[in-house]
Image 1: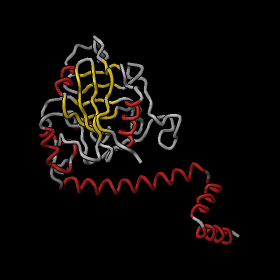
Image 2: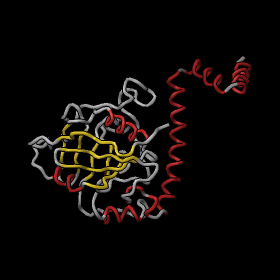
Image 3: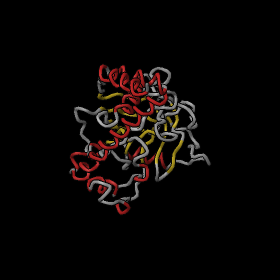
Image 4: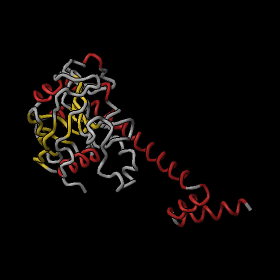
Amino acid sequence: MEKIWKFALAALCLASLSGCESMTRAIRGDEYVNAKIQQSASESSSKQYAKDVQEALKADSSAFPQLSSEIAKDEAEVIMHTSKGDITLKLFPKYAPLAVENFLTHAKKGYYDNLLFHRVISDFMIQSGDPNGDGTGGESIWNGKNAKIDSGNGFANEISPYLYNIRGALSMANAGADTNGSQFFINQNPTDQSSKLSNDSYPKAIIDAYAKGGNPSLDGNYTVFGQVINGMDVVDNIASVETDSNDKPSTDITITSIEIVKDYQFK
């Protein structure tokens, strides 16, 4: 009887892949099937990432968009107007589409207007994007609207071997893997980090870039989605202010608005 049942199930699977999935859901449950689909996607993604890493290690500086101040066709550009001056950034939707779409959409709707730089650590980074102003708030544009992208805890990390937390890199802040909401930070550390890096793990062009500073310890855990191309003096100025025991500036420093200079159309 068991053989007959297995044969019938196999026949149904051959007739329709969706039918097979539906039957498996009926037998094993949604949780089991969803976990298997996620596992398969993760394994495929890991293999592709490993391949991309090997290609990146052989690439020259032109392959790394952070190392150029030019705005490519597949990039966006914004000016972050702050109470300390302007910071111009370019964004990388090719490598971090979710983070860029989230940031641009929030910016267009004024979500970031008048928000504080609530966490500032000299020789490390400056952080903003929290409407609560204390690091506890913020949400993605998909929260409560698209559970496939953000089920309530934030959207997925987007880690690329072509983007790094070099000095001036714009990255998503998170509370752990795949918990990206609205908060972000700009890497400010000016200290040479190149001697800490191996050619087996980092492309030569990126090791050279880390000679100007950055935070390589953050690589692989935080989504890099942009780069400062003008206004690092403003970033340094913000990073140098007096702060309290929670790294919050003693005097408020705010984003007055974010101006979209060059938009990007997502499919």
